[in-house]
Length: 128
Image (cartoon, rainbow, N blue to C red):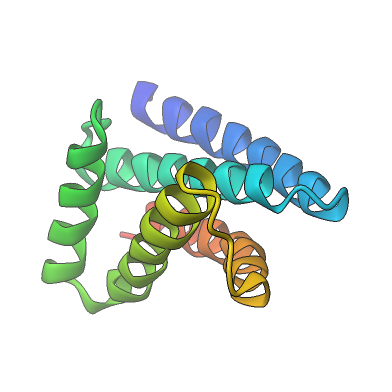
């Protein structure tokens, strides 16, 4: 099945990007780590939406809207939406774009929680 192959391909890339985020964090580059964790979150969400709907988002608004729709229809997706929104604001906009990565311990926590987000997204992608 083409969709299942594409979902697996995206999740493989997501894991690679997330490992890159952890390496950047270990090297002390919190800003780059934040952006890589955001990228992993966004792409994991794209894979989840593709698995659940058969359509891969082509624009960030489709990713946000797709996750919002999943969370509205099924409570299992609500924690993912909360993390996704934190990544958009705290990691992508504030830390990466505006170089405001404070409080640093919160940014690090969100980056580290991204690993669980990926696991949860992958599990929900495979669960009917």
